[in-house]
Image (cartoon, rainbow, N blue to C red; front, side, top):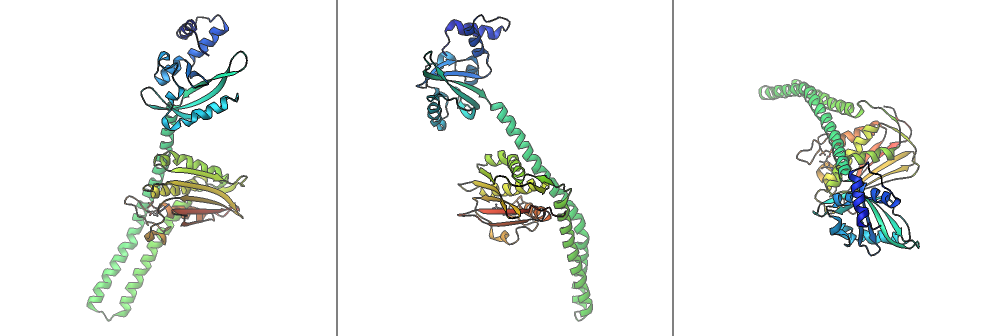
Length: 386
Ligand code: ADP
């Protein structure tokens, strides 16, 4: 559709003065063309631009006079040039493309996120002579989505830190007593050893009391961990694939920003499973964050997440292409306070382990091939006591 200048002038006029009534079908078209909030661009089969509305001027920064006659690929980022031949291959067969999301470049060089629909244009004889594109600027929407997703990820992160903070402070409080008692018994032991080393009975009593206090400290740690893991557990029948997918969406922006490519697959028709949605998402988020952190320095950063049925269980694999588990943590992976990170608390995996175990399942880790780590958690389909 190439608009003659009177039509364009009329269209522009109608756009400014909405009360004026267009007189003919052509004027109606011209009015729609120029009042649209979406860019409408027409091109010939050789890709040269033949029409360019006011919204296109606003969106791309080129005046119609500057861009008409230029190849439409002027608007393409260099890495997306092959897209044009794919679009044209569809158009010449008379098909409209589905609306798809992509990127284009403005005159000032800034890239914008857009959604595009391309349809063939035919002449009076029905022959395809070009294509029309409707382009919507998604930059604001994408930025809002990104902000929202970042906020969500941050909230989960904060919640995790908050849980850890609460746990750490109650641990400190609870552990203070047995540790103080142990210190007292051991100091007494040292005094007795110095003064009367032959008094084996007294020595034995002091050692025994000290061991008891050590065991008490261990029970407290265990108790607090169970509290965190079991917390306020609400289990309902859920789609595990849906729960995992949602957890991935929550972290996806942060993860993609760190250059990690995420692939998710789930077996079809998986049965519902009784789980605490939030807790299982906490497990997935922890595993994914750990994987992304482990891959930070790797040239290839791929994360494959898979949910499948395995007998009477559902199994979730989180596989990364990182350097694998450091030797010093491999044997104590699920114990609290095991970390190799300067800012880590070493609680993530121990909490994941607690959550999965409380669901009657199991969390394990094994090396990935050719390198990396696969964390797997299985959850039983038969409900398990809380
Ligand atoms: P934190 O993340 O606070 O260190 P975690 O319990 O989540 O605590 O992890 C414990 C340690 O296990 C990490 O410090 C890291 O050394 C190791 N680890 C966890 N996940 C991975 C992984 N996907 N690849 C390599 N090492 C990992």
